[in-house]
Length: 293
Ligand SMILES: NC(=O)c1ccc[n+]([C@@H]2O[C@H](COP(=O)([O-])OP(=O)(O)OC[C@H]3O[C@@H](n4cnc5c(N)ncnc54)[C@H](OP(=O)(O)O)[C@@H]3O)[C@@H](O)[C@H]2O)c1
Image 1 (cartoon, rainbow, N blue to C red):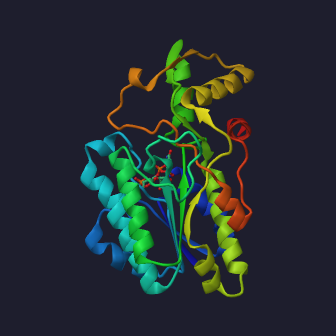
Image 2: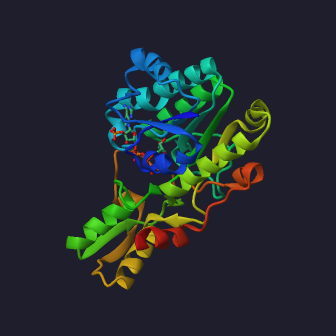
């Protein structure tokens, strides 16, 4: 089996190379070797790689920068995935794609379910939603895994920003009125591998995709604000004997950003468990593992 994994240097893409390795040959690409914004050549390039499965972990993820780089964000997050979906359909192979909690507007008190109506507040969120819609429209063997607040030990993410700021700041103000769920990229990759494994075990592969193709929420269990996330990071750093800054909770209005973020973007992961028996641990438990590593 030849599995094309795009975005090999990203947080999820990097982990996928390991999680999927047992299934066959992993062909990994980055923005130089397979650029999702080069729309005119994308189909031919993917076809030349002869994949049996495409896992698209590439994305334009700079949420604030997307407000000014709209065209590129839409190409990478919407039009590129549309082409991947058309290629998947042409080859009759599955496409696994990742999306985001930022497709929602945050205006609900409860955790978001897959069939809740999206209403993105930013270019990034809209570009990811259009990508989802293009996939649903253009192919029929697919998984769209919406996740949230992705981090790992090596990427550009909230954890590493906090660790870096702890070196020379004595005090930090952190937003306390946005809720979400931190999700370890390794868990996203492992969950992806478990689903692919289940598809391979199913005698009639077409039946599997007919039954399970769709959108799923996949995030760490529980709920956090950015302040809660920072507090947990610094508490673990303190246990490790590191010097930590004092942190002060602030409202979003005191930390203006180019892109608006949802107030509540916690995802309800029930559907994932009902279809595949997969659930992720509480985010704080996972954070401890990541920071120990
Ligand atoms: N990060 C989050 O907090 C978060 C939250 C919710 C959902 N998600 C979704 O989860 C998925 C994985 O995110 P991640 O955190 O792993 O992202 P990431 O660490 O930012 O990695 C994204 C990768 O996409 C590649 N890429 C960017 N532009 C590209 C282009 N034009 N053509 C081809 N590749 C391109 C980059 O490759 P190069 O290194 O070669 O430039 C980068 O390695 C994405 O679909 C994202 O939308 C992420």
